Image (tube, rainbow, N blue to C red; front, side, top):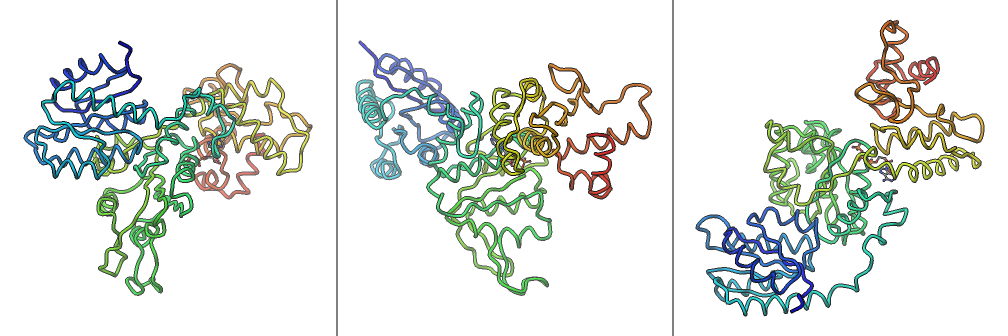
Length: 464
Ligand SMILES: Nc1ncnc2c1ncn2[C@@H]1O[C@H](COP(=O)(O)OP(=O)(O)OP(=O)(O)O)[C@@H](O)[C@H]1O
């Protein structure tokens, strides 16, 4: 008997049920996955194609209200509206069946099930699902083009990011984007918004690292005229401004515990109350959060609330550092070179093979943003029409090993013995700050405690 091509996921907290279901359904369908933990559902759905979910209604010991099943049904439908969900319960009644069907379930089975009945229901569900799916195309070819939204890069790691964005964009699921500085977290958030049904509405970005503790509530929730000394007018908060669209909370890891509590209350109730008023207003937003901080570690250390993390991380997107997808460096370098050649009126500039080799081998601690700035600086500073490695600034990596993984040191800022002159120390500090701030002169100068002009003078002096 040939099996029906269908990927089935069974979710039930009883291992016996999972085993029985797997053994039965494996005879008829090509793939049967199981999990006893419904919290795994979002991860499983984003990582692999699933056609049909057979979902238990009760998970906590003794639970019979089926509320949990309805909750997970809703989550699945948010993540992928096309997945077919069949509910199972030992406590079935007509009312609940009707409610589940209304909320998007396709069918309903009672436990203990009759084998032939369950197989028939699933065969039917798989057939319907197969008809919905477009003819199979080579999946990867879809993403092998040079651009995806504002992203450039064709590495397998980035293709996985694009696939996740495509899957999640159609839903209203909360998304948490993780990654080092400059890896493209904001680019990803904008792509999610652009590809969502909210694209015509606002994309409201709030940099939580830049909002002061005192102004937080007024900025995020809004205020009424006269609610505090400087409140001269009524003001709509950023959350309300995002209504109908997407709210992008950048640097969520920087929020103090007190503000995390306030944020959680609003996200749970989906209502904001402007300062100085007592009228809660409903907000309809798609929430995207981003951070470069280790939120899971922070939860363990008690500096980030676990309940807030679980509220924001329905789906996670991890952006890989540039050094882990070196195959994208060439494309990005060429793209930035083209941009800046145009911007600075130098159309004949080119990168020779040796320079490209150096760019590809370098570890890029500031990721794509650093490559972008490095290219701009090189385009401005280079003399002829060919960009040389010397036109770029390469910092040593954290271990102090050579500048690039494959080439000898070039202008690194590590000190060798006997190098402790004031000049050498100054050069090292300037380099360190430039790397730390990805070439941002204003920020580097501020941290060094000197003016921008003084920093430029030192950059010239040390030939950086
Ligand atoms: N794959 C990419 N292709 C093209 N440009 C990119 C890519 N990734 C990032 N960039 C560019 O690099 C810069 C940094 O990107 P972005 O601001 O999205 O990073 P981030 O991870 O949000 O950084 P931070 O954590 O510092 O806020 C931007 O100018 C962005 O356009």
